[in-house]
Each structure stands twice: as C-alpha cells, then as structure tokens.
Length: 153
Image 1 (spheres, rainbow, N blue to C red):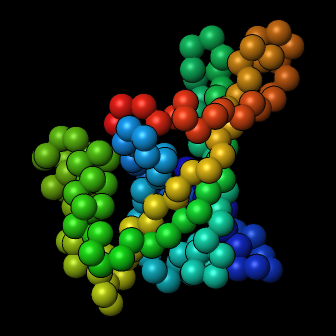
Image 2: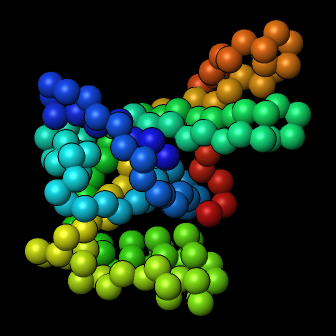
C-alpha cells in the first residue's frame, strides 16, 4: 500500500507491505512494519492521521481497480509485539519454509530495536465505482460503509 503521512508541514508518501487484520465486529486494521527512523514512522509520531491507497491491475473485465482509505496509525507497544509479529508473518507468508526465510526476530520490534509494527485503524474506505466505469469509463470512487468490510476474519 502507499501510505501518506505528514509532519504538519510537508506530506510524504511511502510504500509499505501490509496484511489486513479483520475480526467480526472489529474495525478493519492494516498491519505493517517499518524502521523507527523512517520519515513516515517519525511523521506518525507527530500526526497519527494517515491516508493511503491500494492499487491492482489486470482484474478480469476491468483492467484496473484500487482502494483509498483514511485512518489513524499507531505503533505497537512492547506488549503487543508478540501477537503482531505472529500475525504479520503468518498472514504474509503462509508457507512455513518461506516464512522462515523472511522472519525477523521479535526483539527487532521492541525497546531499542530498529523496527516497529504499526496498525492503521481504517475509518473511511473508497473503491472504484465499477457500475460507472462499465458505462462511461469514468474513474469515480464510491465510499463503502465500514461494516461491509468487517466480515469473518
């Protein structure tokens, strides 16, 4: 996903790898990790409000699709690292052999470690208005109610 942050003066956009966290009745959250010293990580410390986009090409019948969102982003505290570490690697790399190639130690995400897990709690979500696209190829967005995004995890 592309994540947009700000320090209050300058905007910044970063590409980060994420996994969605969904639980019945819970808000959609997007989990990723990054270096603590990265500009977008520092920006979140100043202003936790973020925006982002997801973009896919080659969908049958359309050729393009994507989503935009807004939300609030927070670093995972030391107590939450074990769960986020497990979820991120299991969801991102379902094959245990592949996972072991990418797995970083949980200690990298705690205390003075160089990385942090971050979650974006999504509060608004937009998708391509495919009905409109099929009629006149106008790239319009339609807001999707958040309850439509929180199904079985």
